[in-house]
Image (cartoon, rainbow, N blue to C red; front, side, top):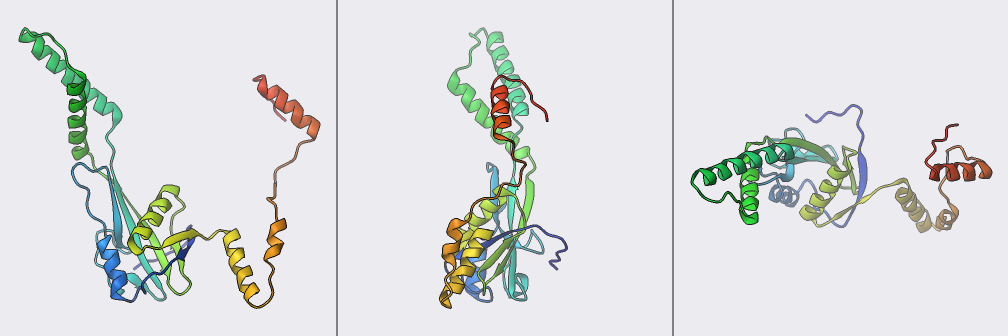
Length: 232
């Protein structure tokens, strides 16, 4: 089962229509964008898996629904060839070819195109030998509130989730920041005739750092340009 104790997450609001998670359309769309294993020449692949097990890509009410919430996850497999190892392999291969040419009485020379082809062939071979890094990021969807929680604070992970969610459901995920949420609450108030939205126009960012006197600030700025370190 999916169990959570302490958890950090990014919160979003769905912009657009998404099928009900209890229906077949929702499960079909997840299946169409399910996780597929890395091909031999791929560096990254990602897709939906169940929240309970990143090896399961069968979606139905029993694997998705958690009370009023739908739960699934984005699995991301990625691998990258070690650059130093690739350079070392290229160097050995080039040396071997040049020596072979020299032993055969030919002029030892490798052209740019041949070197480029050699690099690509070795990169693909090393890529096939490299084990992928596997990650999975849980996504919780509350259909009634159009609320989405992505259980990671990673920027790249959230970008992938938002991209794949849009590809899957043709609906965008808008970050639900305090500012966005305040606008939603004020919009609700406006519908009751109590329009308080104009009050946000006077809000300014608060600076909680210690402000230096103007003269001290100018002195530090002048010294900083000279390369001298200043300490309080």
